[in-house]
Length: 113
Length: 113
Image 1 (tube, rainbow over the protein chains, first blue to last red):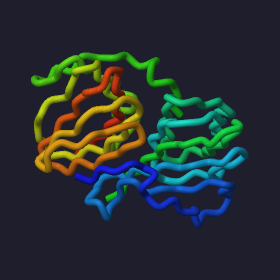
Image 2 (tube, one colour; image 1 turned 90 degrees about the vertical axis):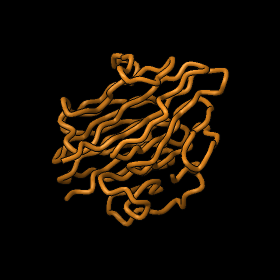
Image 3 (tube, rainbow over the protein chains, first blue to last red; image 1 turned 180 degrees about the vertical axis):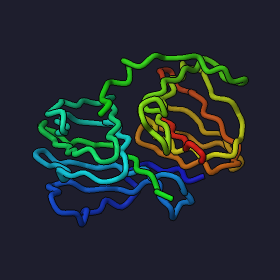
Image 4 (cartoon, helix red, strand yellow; image 1 turned 120 degrees about the vertical axis):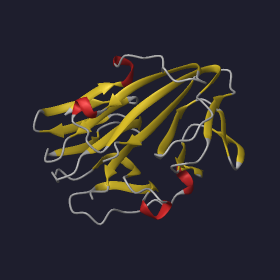
């Protein structure tokens, strides 16, 4: 069993275009034996955001800390700790930290077979 | 996009043997269009626990709130908020709330094809 605190995992700068003041930790991934899906946690500084994009896999998201907005085809919705979201494959989405503190967002993605 | 607070989801008593003072909310599941994996959150009252068991699918776990112990073949390890764990398929495991407050544990499981 892999069991750690998330802060023990290296915090990396995503290579992706459209990211601002946001880092990612890969908590559980293929290298750990996870064959079906991966667990990551994003840290967004105040004003930071993920890219506004769409892709052919889904997200399962849980807000651990902070407040902000989820942008999508349905418009803009506020998020707070304890919120969760299912972003279906193909849906445009973006997470923005609009609060004064850090936002931490757990985001899980499938490994497509 | 499904987007809610976890408290808006019905809290159910698991049918499983060996569960004590523990409830489950299915946050993201097949009914929501999630084909690859499901997100659930367990609420353990003080003294509550999940079953001591093993099964042929993995768990990806994130501790949202509370303190307790993870029992496994490797023995007993403490957990606290921000901890995560990967429980491989086939490994015996149990989550126990040994604290004075409620424990909330996010636990994701694959839909096996």
